[in-house]
Length: 268
Image (cartoon, rainbow, N blue to C red; front, side, top):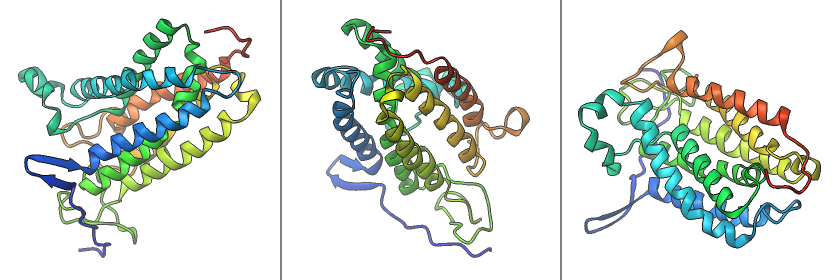
């Protein structure tokens, strides 16, 4: 066996209170939502104002529903369609895990569209401020993947390789940490710089486009080190499902940045 770093065996359950288990994965979602919500309350107040702090408070519920429903539906459709076609009721078994970022993103976009339409807000302006905080949740989510010892990387001989509890005896890339750094930290810093530049804020949709393109690129790179899902393996051209789903995000993000109109104070 190749030399490998020991995997830090952290119990996925932080606290067990009788039948109630508080898991790190759930805390990752909670931390991402709370920190993102608090930061977005500040960002929407930057001129041109995107929404009120109270409207951000109201949107949190919409966003949570979009993440959960969209994320679960995306996983069912993109990653285990055959299984759930034979047992569709199991799509409701959220406690068994299985969420798709791309599905969750689609769910939040739909929720944001309906919310902005209801409140007469600019969809692109609101989206710029929202996407600037999304990497917080991505960062904590990838750390939770690492703690759970899931979504591990491909076999490698790099000095920092790890043997994951359920990944077989071979040392593997700790790809969850790579993705936490790229999708979380790096993307967060980039978007925080962009959203604080007045000339960029005047380009409605530019920051949101930067998020879509930036996440897509980070995901494509991260998937080069991550082991593909066992039930899917490598797909067209040796790509993974995550890479194929990220290509439309990159194209949409680039289009948003290139076509972002200068803000004239009108909702759009």
